Length: 108
Image 1 (cartoon, rainbow, N blue to C red):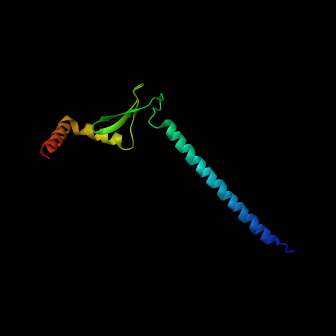
Image 2: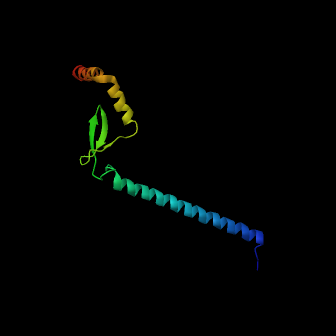
Image 3: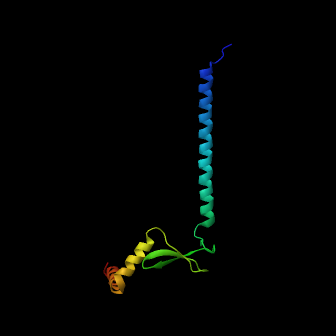
């Protein structure tokens, strides 16, 4: 009967260890994805401070989330900059933009 050499045994053991390592890594990746999805489902659009469901509202043409319970505000990436830009333009520029938009709706 054939007996594998020590080098052959080492080779096959190494192959098996690498296969098991890949299986463990894939399982860990899948579990992390499932946990991320579970946490998103659990916390999506909930206030970080009090846990209430956030409501979406528009401020200066930017949709933001506001907590009706504690008044907390959540801004998505880039929304703060948009609000600051709208504030910097001032009331005259905002009114002019509104008039232009309405004029386009009436004449468009």
